[in-house]
Image (cartoon, rainbow, N blue to C red; front, side, top):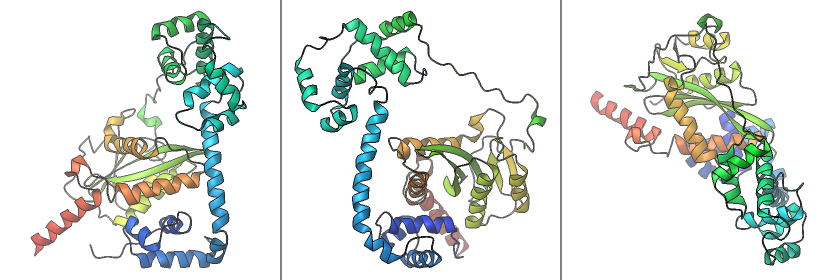
Length: 389
């Protein structure tokens, strides 16, 4: 309480990008992130002086160009989204393309769908007026559809999911059993993954620690118990990995880091960010799984340096770290689902907004009496001050 917060350069750069790239004012950015508008202005000036962001005159001069580029990018992203959904349609016959356009016409403009599928809108409208199966029998249409959706999923889908695709994306109507028999007849099978086998001997995993937390996800005070884990997000440039550290007292994300590599350095950066923000005392319990990032010598050295007690889940038991797993589930279900990130930087900025501006400051938790993590901590410290007085 009372001591100034030290923000990392990565945090400052993300805050400044809200102003320079997303059009926020310094006041709006400060309100979203819980810091003063003067701090944001200082960061903008400092980063412009250091060359980390373009000068103001360059930004203003290219504002119209940037607007045009954003509009063009929006159109290209929409076309790219259509292409991904119909990745196998372009190599099919015209009737299959027409059927696919009909299944998607409630979601996208017909002219845009026709341009992507390389057919004319007039031809599509003429086809709509023709008998539904004028060019192929229903049985042949169904088998072609099954082979198409099986191939589109790279052989991953079984008859249940292929049946779902057919019902939602075509005009064909059939039951699951019909799809199952057709797949069996054509020799189509779904891919089955083997259960991951962990090392039989714990000595094969270096620096593994006992499960001190033992699924006790409660804490009486802040900075008593932290949990950590790493997840991944897909972008058009490849995977982006996110490492987080949560405080079990308030479920607040106290530290995070992102990288294109899921290595020990990523886990260390997230932990060091949490330590810099919270400055915990000796005896803090840090719990994670037995991933190579957390069993590495570099990560253990950081724990030892700050007197942090290490706890690790049992091998292959995700329930031992259920709170962090639940957080990742919320992140992907509430925020990431339905989004397509063009670059890793786009994903970084979006995840930064979720963590700092929404999750910690605004998202209500049933576990916290429907309060946000920051509000829950503020009430704790206010009650503590009253007791001391």
